[in-house]
Image: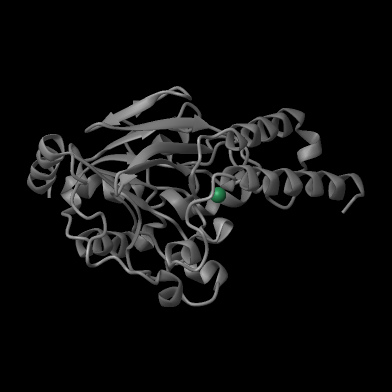
Length: 300
Ligand SMILES: [Zn+2]
């Protein structure tokens, strides 16, 4: 794959032409139809075909959990692996697009829960790729255990992760440069203490935009947890929402595709590009948190 890119970028330099067509033939043009109506948690392991997002970025996850593959001239970047059970499916999707999983050089992630990074240790073993994380997630990934500050910690106990090797910890706002593509990390501790979003520039047909892989914004918890008893957690959740609201964001992707109507958008049934996508996502999170606090105040 890289030989082709090198030749294409040489052509670009010499002729000022567009790079090779972004869409690989194996990418589905109708992932929404392939997945069918929202099946809730059953969709987390339901196989989906790979789908083109924009430029050199593809959706390689399941019907209910997003994984993103980005091709750079220095190798592939994979963001989120989905559940451990979905690893064979993820690898099949990478291969279906014509890539060898061993071309994956960097592993990035949104947040430290089994449904998004349960397959991280296995993928790392298979590919040898380096795991690059944000400041508040390294301990959970190394130990496989939930962060005790996580409102869902008690119920996550039975979903421990296989411990992964953390190769690099970036401070929020820093970038990982991969073959000329710069992935900027944004800590936004709303859904979990380690919640992280990533942004990168993507070009297609001579036009460039910013893709924002914005993390989950739901403030849910184990049954006995009350946010009202943890003011620091509420402050962190609100600060995280402000980060998401302010992300550079022309095209939003979310860890659960249903949170941003992503499968329909990838299938041409709704606008893929929406510069207000992150603002709307953050607003949904603010409304959810306000409702949660109101319920706690009314003793529900
Ligand atoms: Zn989660």
